[in-house]
Length: 490
Image (cartoon, rainbow, N blue to C red; front, side, top):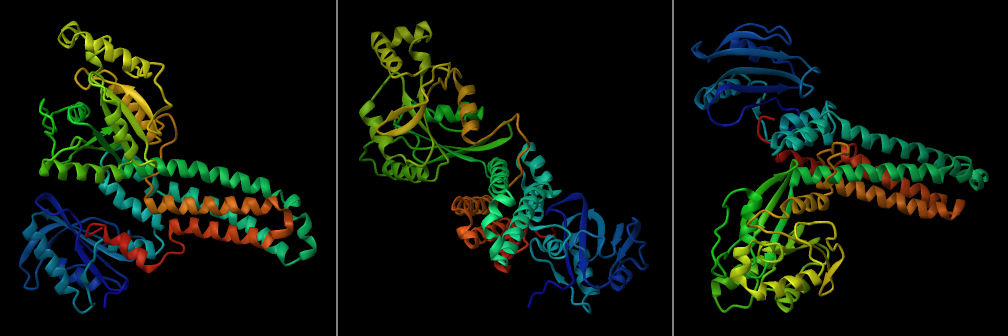
């Protein structure tokens, strides 16, 4: 049975060939015998030694740097030794096998994914939010995400959470002390200004939640789905946002049969842009499958870009699509091909004729403003579904900067604000739970001292939600899920 007290070993560097490879060992007990077996001499703590690494017969495996970190001054808080040699997979496997052989009597075994960082958490070298930030820093897909993960890893996010939890504990202490002396209950809320203290805690929690939500978007990215009838320019918009031809564009309706996903980054925020099959009535079996997948993708979207054609307005069909869009999901109505209407080039106008002028007038009557200029209708409502409307041209790039800024706004991004913490969904949910309990506590406070016991209980629940973020009260099952997603050797 696997134990958190077993000595463990793993290759700590990424698979493949490289200039340097590291084999890491961690153990609650000293590792003197293992060190002696591999390098033939003791190691001075925290000093780099250039030495040969040898097998049981004294045959050279490799040579490199050996480092020893006695407990508790190590990454895991246990006794740790690292053998840093050349980064070839064969030589690293031989060195790993030698560590397992030399440490057999101590019960050394291969480390599970994330087990070194799990040991660091269990030995109070870092809290749970910091441990998660280690994995997030490794997985960061942008500079902004890496900066935010580094901030969380150093404990900045945990300090904010712990500070709020401590303030709640102080208020709880006053409440519960008062409950032990009923004769003082009547004046408690006024005497300790409990309502104003609670309001201040709730306000600071709301601010932290806003930062955490930004950080969650940095970590996960925004799932943006392009939807609309065939040939409204969904694939062209995907290509324009991506900066290259990620999707096939043709004049033939129904070209896109399955989703095309492209990740882009705006101001450090990752966006997963999904081009989908055009929505229409069709008897084509393959296209029907693509349309069904489009609706499934729409259900999972964080943001929906509903594209419409400025030159071919079909309000009834567009309204039918809008009526099926999830009411919970933000929608931007994107009027594409604005280069072919008012302000378009003469060649486009000549080819489209008077009909284009009429359609342009119709679009203007609908409060569509090309390029996101002042006057964009932010309260448009089609078939009862609220949406913002923006006029763009995927061909010329008109309005795309405004579209990018709208997507950032929906993501809650504030480039002039504080750096967000790279929070996870479980952090967001814990903060929301804490905020909910504080809100109920405020309702009890409004009833004065008659329900102080309920007031105290809500404070206790809010405190528990916050401490679950840092791992003060965390189930073993949750720990297993979190650390199993780490890479081996970390």
